Image (cartoon, rainbow, N blue to C red; front, side, top):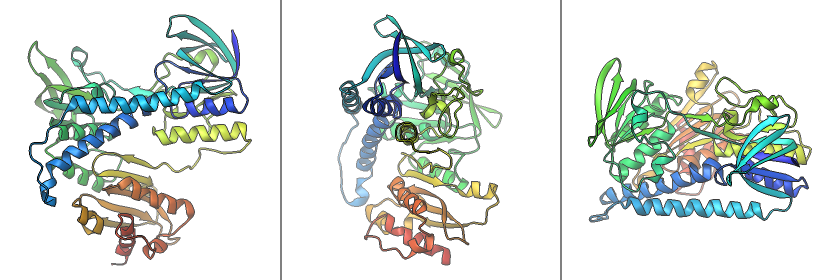
Length: 461
């Protein structure tokens, strides 16, 4: 049995940099990865999807260029080339990360699947087929999450798609049925609609992105419907059937009534589950919740001293930037003797539909739920000079403020470069800059961020 100072299981956005930093700090470290370096973000999430979103945006711009006085004749979508470009960028990111890790002193990169066999002891089935055992004083679990597959009659009889496998298509689906009307489903639904697919989205809630404010959901619904995407809410897929040589027929229940949807492909996008099933965490005493998420405290340590969990495997906000922040907190606490916590940290996020949806802090729904004294600042993108000039006035800016302290409590930006504008308000919130200061702030003209002046001036009318 080989002894290490630290073992990191999973090379996602927390595991990879943490392993490298621990090794450089003098700890003999092993990084165990069962598949590819980089985790979900590099291989199945951010990198490939946003690469393909860029291709879909280009198709949309070509299709709508005449409004700006530019005629593009006979453009076409080459799905095989889109996939090739996506794969090349993924390989570039993955291989660069792997080379950096393998060149790090004190760090062993081991490809295989880890299973706990006892107190801080693991068995690793190497990809070569051999079995090796390791132990360490410190363990860091960064195994991430995978798509959740619901029980739907007939689903396993077809080659359904997930957020991972849909990016392997080299031909545009004729009709894509998307099960799930939240961030993943909407990004892919709009993307493939722009590539040329007929798209139907099935959402069990009363509206898409149901965790956002109702006006956000309504505006986004309008935007997607204007692109000829069919959205079915209060709906669930109860049965899927496919006869040899025929299309797939999905039975969708909408408010109790049946609707048959004939499609060529089905994308399952109803959430993700932690990858803890094969870890055998009970063998080392680590506790999980009922969904299989690893339980941690505010310093990301489990109930077993010296064993930590980072990223999506612990539940909570499942974002790459949160996973990376987990790494920085654990590293600085352990190596630099700081006293950092995940408690009350900001959780910004962005959905990369077009236009983007960028969010930070609380929304109006949450403010009402907490019974806060608040005011709403709201500005349609149709009143934003930069949006008018660039020909895209879809969406709006919205902020929740405390009328007494003048502090910004949260912001939702649904519009072009919504994530970038949201980040300006995040920085203001972090620095304690009040909304009345931003109201008269000097921004460069003409930027999207400049309209934050008008957003907060709108509160005076």
